[in-house]
Image (cartoon, rainbow, N blue to C red; front, side):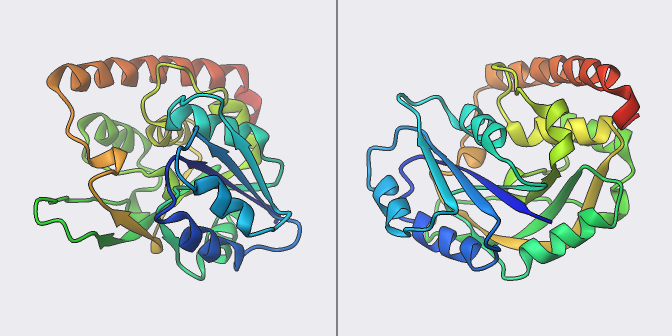
Amino acid sequence: MSVSVCMATFNGSNYIEKQLASIIIQLQDTDEIIIVDDASTDSTIEIIKSFNDNRIKSYINAVNHGHVYSFSLALSLSSNEIIFMSDQDDIWLPYRVNIMCSALNKSQAMVLSSNSEFLVDSKPSLVCLFEGVLESTSSSNISNIASIFLGHIRYYGCAMAIKREFLKIILPIPDYVESHDLWIAIAANLAKRNLHIDKNTLIRRVHLNNASILSRPFSKKIWSRVIFFLSLINIEYRLFRNKNSFK
């Protein structure tokens, strides 16, 4: 199955070369990498262009829009059957594409979530606890959604693969959404087309610039709960419109 890799970049010059190298080696000639750069001010774009690979298609935002907008745009520009999302600062494990494509192809799922190994930068003040997904809870859709609300389960876009036909549900991603990862995970569980695998498929770099580990004020946490319920309503409406496909 043909593969599109969707990546959002912003000032990723310290990491982007190793990440792209770990992806390209797993791709076929008909695959593609869609990169949306969010107005980087460092050498990220120059490093991307240095690969001189016609499978890499890069787009540059005129101004900084944030990672949700950039991922949404990248997804909309993709054209192949299986879509992987990728952060700029991770490293894909060598078997990632084959394992995830095979698992999706053998299932009725629309979204597959895997797990990660972690490479922690040497920052004494950095302490993070990460929970992944369990294969045994793939079909525990209501429980998974409740766990998302409570923050007890961790879905990461960089650990996901999506079947193309599910884009009609997840796109466009509303402007109010803070996390494209959770938006997609909620949609997959509401549609009952969700699949977990226990396998680690990438190495995630953990550093102080990771958006997912930044501390959040209480007001932001309350707003996130509001966004959760808005997302439920929006996705249920989209699934209703496409009920012959996903219900």
